[in-house]
Image (cartoon, rainbow, N blue to C red):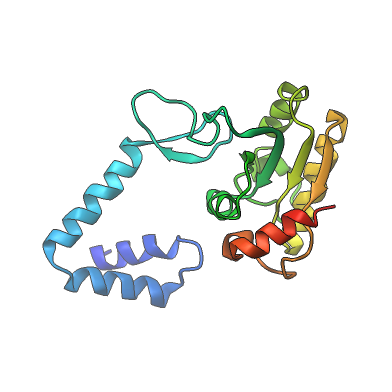
Length: 198
């Protein structure tokens, strides 16, 4: 297989990228200056060498030294009484723009309908452990999952797993359109959904 075909297949693995778009990426890189391709290569390698996953919320962050917590989890001024559960890092970034000042937990995805073992798709055991460990400080857990059938399905699984914690569970209000992903919502919509959570 040629390098063009190999790279095209790699780009096709990206979320939302089909064969045609993947091929366009490769064609662009072929016509780009060699310095740009070298810079891209360096930055992809640096992504693995200079980033880490927060040991508390599981968000990826730029690592400085041997830090184990991201800037949000390491900030003593955050409201530790509120824990916002999101599917992925991009959702967390969007919620931050809405002005939320609590803490987060990144599930790592959603559970497909009909899946037998949720732990293959989301960090369910890590979340329940965190809820137990933080039971004294957390007053509310906000389930901020996408307004899709898989998001609703995952919300039900997570809510069931957290019922034993005794912590108040809320979900975002439906200021978000059904079928929409949190990552693509604007900060005002997220702020509205936060204020109308149930």
